[in-house]
Image 1 (cartoon, helix red, strand yellow):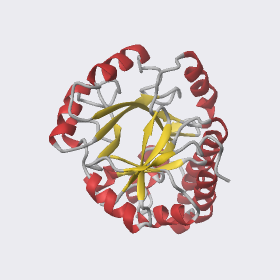
Image 2 (cartoon, rainbow, N blue to C red):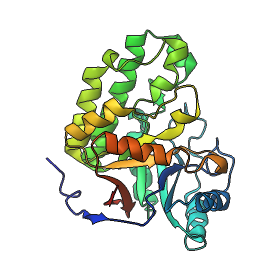
Image 3 (cartoon, helix red, strand yellow):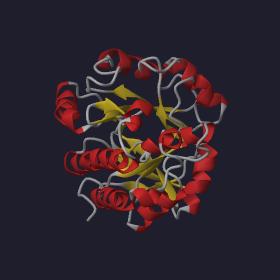
Image 4 (cartoon, rainbow, N blue to C red):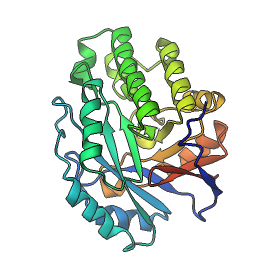
Length: 284
């Protein structure tokens, strides 16, 4: 059942250009190289209509970015950029959502009620360890996939019940490292878990992101790819965002056009923009 908050949706609209990037990092993130202004200039040059900054909001001790986001300075920088460029500039964050950090995330939101437009929820830490090649090296394929998707399922459950975030970032992130550790990612190795999470997300009004970062590397595909996107739509999923996962100005907006084609192929007639964490469907 669609949650009550999602029913307060705005009508499907057109925004002229439909190039939206809802996953952009700046120097407010420990692993990014470009400023808010530099990213806005790049987005304008590439014809984007909207950009949503999603700097890291992490709480796990295993994450080097934990506790590093300065909420007041971040809000000031994004607010200053809004209206200074020929595109819509929105305030967001990429929230690290391992189970041990859920209480800290929710407490932060209460202590710092920033006027977020959008929150992206991403699992970067599993069982107290960053998801990377060392994580895979100490686990079998089955154990690694199971642990990752168990963490993601727990996050989606909290998002659906307490609005911890609005959409899942890079749903199958573990496949970024799988080719080196286990060989190419195969959905059949985790299909039942993925199906459960997609159903929870669709029923709870939690969205999926088409993360285009995989198009810029050896993966050669988005996270997630077509099969998962199509299944999410079949299960009634409606909220779909597109993000470059840019950590430098030169990749802002990268792959957005390709992601729009993928969304259409998966059966979506619209992607989702946000204002004040309320979805706006933009016809594609």
